[in-house]
Image (tube, rainbow, N blue to C red; front, side, top):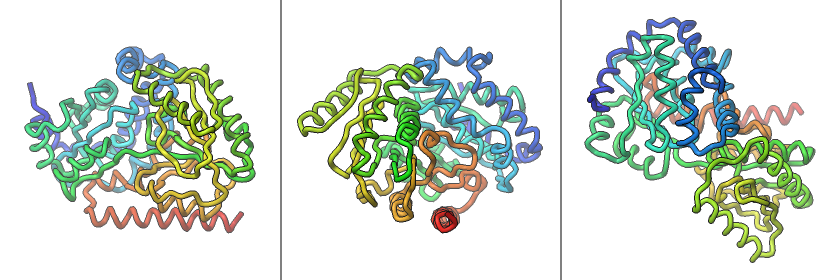
Length: 413
């Protein structure tokens, strides 16, 4: 049986073959494959879903909604624009991509840039969810056979030095999603040759001019998608003090309704215990909270502007904030902000400084597309061989462009 290192070495020499594939052929194979994987009635999904539902614990409706959320924006013109960018890997070699256990389908956010760069890659699937990545790559390779020799998946116990040491030593680039422990290990093993996406969380902002019912419905989707397990899942919402109570009531109602449309998936005792503790803590502190079944959602009306991570199971805290909230404890740990109503420039700047890389209307935070740069990082350029110095410079430029674009939009309004 081939080892992950032997598999990777077999991928390393096919970059030239990849560069010969016309953009249109690659785009057609990508669109056809991804369309099939977003259709629960397709043969590919019918074969995959039983295993995927078991490994993820999501409900059927939750799984379908989640995959559409993460994948629909990577079809058509969005994918075409990414695949036709000029970044190309110009020498032999492979990249290693370490995938997280959840959410399912996250391989799409690294696979498309690798295809755009014509960069061969070995993907490490989590033992907790080893099904989606190999099924996707097999289907893609059947539609465009040269890809079968350029992309592969393997699963092993993370931290095994016999497996990982040769991979880290020979990979041109290591991309890793996961825990702080995973991030630290990869940074130590492949210094200067790694891109790490550590654990992040997302927040919401309700500003003046927002329609409370519409905002609540949107935030509820941003909370419930993937059962609040993704880095773009909203865990707390900042609301002007005068509107906090009314919004908490509206959000609780929206989450309760959504529990029927997108039923929560499987939970375990630790998940439920965390929510019970959050509810009991709210009672002890005299806070108002809303919620029925533990996994349907819990809304806690806070009296403290400081945020804390959610225990999960669609639990969210509503924090009063008349202006810029205190975010110093969250620098480098934030991913996205779901926005309803007006977002003042000073507040926008504060979230940018805290590390937020995605701003989106409430209800669309997790609906990313191929143009989104997670943490401001251009993965296609990284796969193609940008130096670490160039990457850091580009990330800084991306953030500056975001800030100036926002400022100009505000002035235009």
